[in-house]
Image 1 (cartoon, one colour):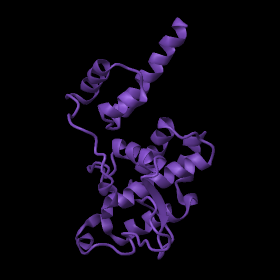
Image 2 (cartoon, rainbow, N blue to C red):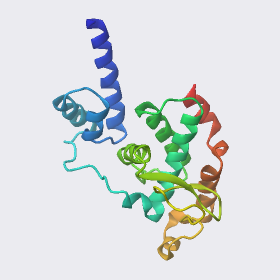
Image 3 (cartoon, rainbow, N blue to C red):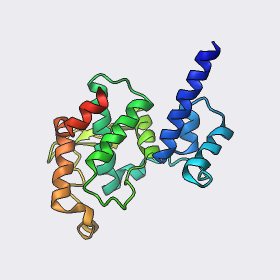
Image 4 (tube, rainbow, N blue to C red):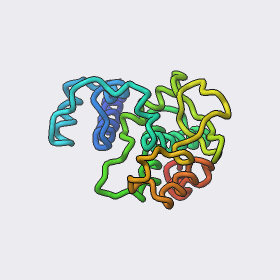
Length: 202
């Protein structure tokens, strides 16, 4: 029993380190591990070099529906759905693997920029879909699969790539080549970087 407990604590510590390194918030760590809050805060300070941010997690669905975050959230969730459909169990490990795929697919963005979709929001998004607060809907123009509010009427959704807001033209991240790559990922799971996918699912 003692050795099992030590191994479990080690595995949970390793998981916490990985989550913190990718920007996971303390509330997320508390939910996904059995480590004490004090230990998690110490780990966070040691890894990030500063205290963890205070305040509640961003539980609003509205962020996911704004034009650029919606594209990134949809890329992540397509990766997550792809992994689950190909045999991985839903849960934090698959969320991490899907997030790795998301980061890989978003290499066209500047490496100086932080990902539009942080790990904590990606984790919250999966919870929202599981609780049927949000869902994937098919764009009636490009047929890509995007995140929408739950129970969105079928055949009435147009994505922000097909119908971008006027301000999108002023943002470098909406250039034609970026949109084309986004569409490949969102419309057909096979367009996910298969070498990365095979490595992650192995």
